[in-house]
Image 1 (cartoon, rainbow, N blue to C red):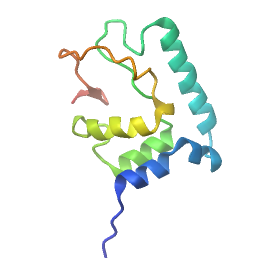
Image 2: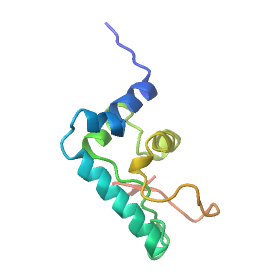
Image 3: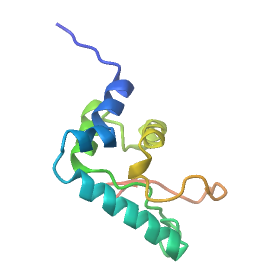
Length: 120
């Protein structure tokens, strides 16, 4: 027997911030508040999440169980191959974003993405 689910729809419903709050997921309110404070701190500091040497950027802070669901449904979620899926998902879940995505600096060709300490 095979079971198929439209992963993006299921993924979005499963990780929806408001849904997690309504279901009283443990720690979700505190986690989302911390992301909001971090976003404001980056905005105040003027770094927009960039490291001091501008070699990497903190783009999101995802509530642990929500991240686990994302990785279970899409095993390429945080890999370089899944970058389009990740940012598409992030567009649907803006409360996890740690910087203002409306003010994106010019594309830099010298930036590299790291996942779990490995270049992707």
